[in-house]
Length: 528
Image (cartoon, rainbow, N blue to C red; front, side, top):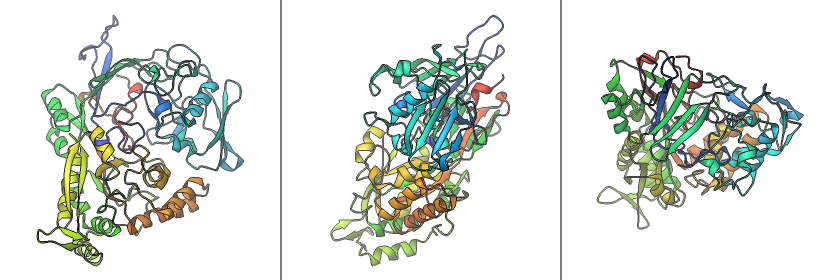
């Protein structure tokens, strides 16, 4: 998995499992302290990160457990200070951000945290030699400067409205990471941060084990051992939960419903997480505007919400959720297979004897890939292909790993996911900018629309909220005219957790979740 990518760390494909105990109910691996066993928690994830280095993209949206950013989020996703002592002072018309740093903070190896570590982190990420696929998110930075040990000043090229949100990015220690090759050094597997937990073991493909940082500036966590087990398959996760091997899990709705009233609590976390089908410009069928427009109104989104999600979500017409203030009213698509057939007829796509259309000798067919083991993506893909068949388009659904899928993305469709609740720039810019096509998992559909490119630049560079809203309205209207993706649903994340843990909370979650989100988003603050 590539950090910062559209597929992220698994969304509802990502799994999470939780166990905890005390002296009376302890989990394997608990440490005795003479006064009772320590409390532990185990979280399962479907896709482990490729790296744990924030310089290469790990934890870029905050809440990484091993590291801290200058800022972090509270339960309502409002920004609050972390390594910064307070929220930034914003001057120069939104072009200068000044952060005063928290005093007395140390990295888990005992070395002091200073402004130089902040400068090092941001400058390294922005270095063209650094293989960070998300560095474009920091494009607004012109310079970052340390003023003594306790102050950092960012100067921006333009008044990038959501810049403070970008400063949840984890800070790496210059004294360690700065002594290694940023792309190949050991820091990616043996990280050191200021966060509430330290990495003590990483068994690739099996688990990551974290232990509480006793010197954490926010106070040592009482959950002393935090393990991320890798459980890739939804069905396996449900089976292990049912057998008692696991005490909690994130599950798709059709599996989660089986656990109701069985001594577990179900949590439905709202999210900005969407499922979409990429329609690669390089595919002679999927890249045809008429085919794209026809598919956009031939898909029964509400049936997917009702049948696949069992009501745990809502229809999607783009990356912006329909209940967001940034959603453009009037861009909803009505399910209309008859109108879809008319679009194809008028564009010269004529039905053959088998019902599949052809044009200039080209058959209206293309493959659609989804990640193996992800039932939600599989079900979305099958429903999409079924709806397409009804208008004469033959879509072959195939499963594979990302290693199999990634090389095929320029030509083949993919059942993809994404979503960030923080700002519309975070979703739309990497998803749609033409010059990001082929850049890892950015612009997976190789979408190319000059009008959208210009609007994305305006939305990113303007400090005026009304001007930004108008820009993103333009983007969403253009996606109606030429939809390079077929957006299907926004999904709620369903968690099943043993009820002995009491009442837990969730945040509005992004696509990229697992360790950073779920009922354990604030596990370091639990007081068992």
